[in-house]
Amino acid sequence: MHARRVCCAVLVLVLGALAACSSGKPSPSPAAGTVRFAAYDFSENQVLVAVYAEAARRAGVPVQVQSGVATREVLEPALEQGQVDVVVDYLGTATAFVRRAAPEAQNTPEQLRAQLAEALAPRGIGVLAAAPAEDQNGFAVTTTFAAKHGVGRLSELGPLASGLVFGGPPECAQRPLCLPGLEQVYGLRFKEVRSVSSRQATVEALISGQIDVGMLETTDARRFSAPILVLIDDLGLQPHENVVPLVRADVLDRWGGRLREALDGASARLTTQELVALNRAVEVDGLTPAQAARQWWARQ
Image 1 (tube, rainbow, N blue to C red):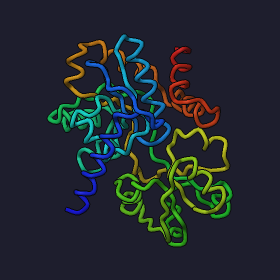
Image 2: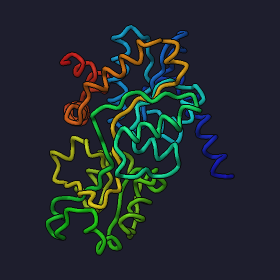
Image 3: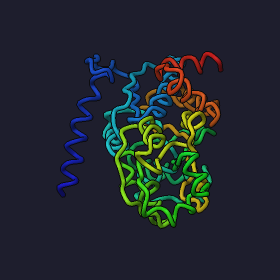
Image 4: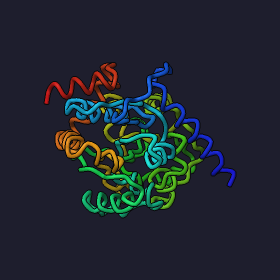
């Protein structure tokens, strides 16, 4: 009960924050009919929300973007309660969260989308077309560590885990596809688990030796330039994680086919390679998510 009260208190605080922009300056209340997009608290999702919001904007739909608001544990209830209208999610993780159980890794994206749609329909949320772009949880080590210990697969960490330090986002400890999954599927129990504030901080902690294993998204552009290796998920813990917009059903009804077609059109164009390029534009080149999204759309 105590944990539930804390979660509710956090939800109230974050829902209040939805009335302010991510810079901390107050933003005006959205006009009637404005579609409110909200992003999770990590860079890639903020980029994705900017891409989909720009698609709606180009279709003549008024939008308001709240970037980096909170974790899924807060934004999914906010979506159900009508505090936000659109969240861009990932099929496997969203399905695991809503159904409170990790999906079967062999499920196809079509099966996962059907399961997610079935679970969210009674809550007034529509699941739109999933993009080809896919981003799974990845678990990385430095190339030096990999060479020293001869590891390239997650299962090869088994004999080493009890002496290793793991780093990841705070919610990793509760997510079935993160630490609990590593324990259940791979039997990995680390000597120490550290909470890391961001994916960039995870890369830095790996390179500096503060942690031995870190959680990174498989589309994180930094992993292609830093001396790190994402280990192969050889026992199939991670399900398909295609990018998918979740939209309140009443908002879809209000805008007829215009909003759905705009967001589906964005999904159809978004490949994994394109997502890595978008991440690179923000993580490496220093663009804001909105700038990266506009630049991406200009090339389409």
